[in-house]
Length: 288
Image (cartoon, rainbow, N blue to C red; front, side, top):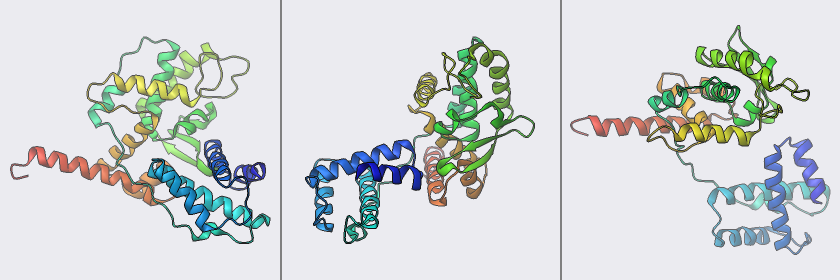
């Protein structure tokens, strides 16, 4: 049953490996609660499992994901004929709280990107990936999947394969282009090995860079800036989106750049900008 559900998530729903792992873990926990039996399962049993998770102190975001997983699993089992009906249809949609993401202000972003470099391959790579993350707002998985040919230097755009295997082109500016050129000319050739392939960013052993390495690079660079909130690559994505809106970009353009399927996902950045505006108003206005 689990193998069939995993294949459904991977090949029919085209979910990411991370999401598939999370869903399989959730279903395994549900089946443990049900003693491995699906017969007689109804919405009361499903709600009972979610209530147990709530009582165990699970976060609302976790409960929201597990509710979505149950609905997907029960619908799949009903289509397979393992359940006479789909009890997941009767579950309410749990909503995770929307938190305002931590972002760098524009001065902090400049400090992160203007750190001195020794000119070593690692320095050149780290500077190039930081510049590209902030310039484009792409996800860390999208950055790691880039090949050399995905960068169009003449048009200053990078071709990105996002969620759901949707391709989009994202523009970037002069600083990112110069950093990429330095890495590709003076850094990458020193790390290329037989198995490197066309990967744009490499690890020290010559393989394609992984997300964990990128996260460590971003955390280390941000920690050097006094007063900056600790963040990883997604924090640079949040910061880029916020600064675009503060600079006058329209919401729909930012949605296209970030690769959001829904405008609702992009609207959170307008709240970040409003909060920053309110803070500045309270500090500066004599009658705030």
